[in-house]
Length: 281
Image 1: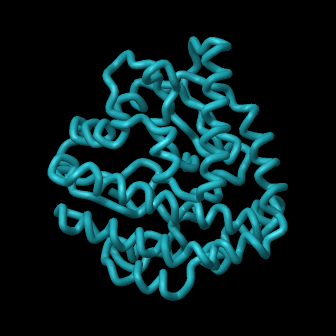
Image 2: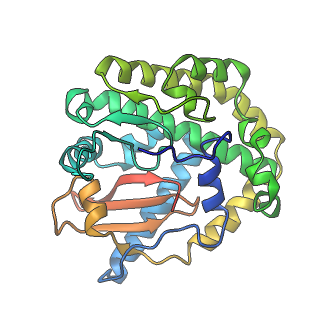
């Protein structure tokens, strides 16, 4: 797998670049969403954005708003994915720079995959919030949005030290070495622990950043206004397969007010999240 970040720049820089441009939200194929489904999907997206801002914790959001089997289904989708001849590695969609042996999708515990997913999502969200808080939308669309110093400012030195100590995690926010492939359940657990510790160490710095910043509410309002214009659409067959659902499963794609792209499935009469990430293409 190719590294998806910028050479010698933070891995999340590309994500920010896509989010902060008018074409940020990738569009799913058109077709067949009812007015009732659209209203439900937008309500689910608003609940996701609100709960995430309140908790700043993807694990907490997932307990309330995600489908219970979202991760096991994603792993099944990864196991079934052909990926071309000889494909032996994969990345979790929406998570830059972390690469895994394909066989690990079946070998490792689902809870450890969830730990990696949630902690990586938290770190990306922390950068996102810090940037939105400290800079105007216009500044972020210019040089400030690509300045490594701004993007890395939310991380205290001790968090960077923890990330650098793990070979796989060392590339997560800044590429420092060639691709590192996580190949064993033990390495996956070590990566999860590393990312979780970085999250723990970064939370106080994030709180300081948000307390000092002046732009978060205005920027989130602008994002919400922009992404509200995106249509609610049916997810493509490829997206359904990536989420681990069989052909014909009705998945909805919606942009949340905080710019996150969501895929939703109906479970028990309620739309639940099966995937959420900042748009990257």
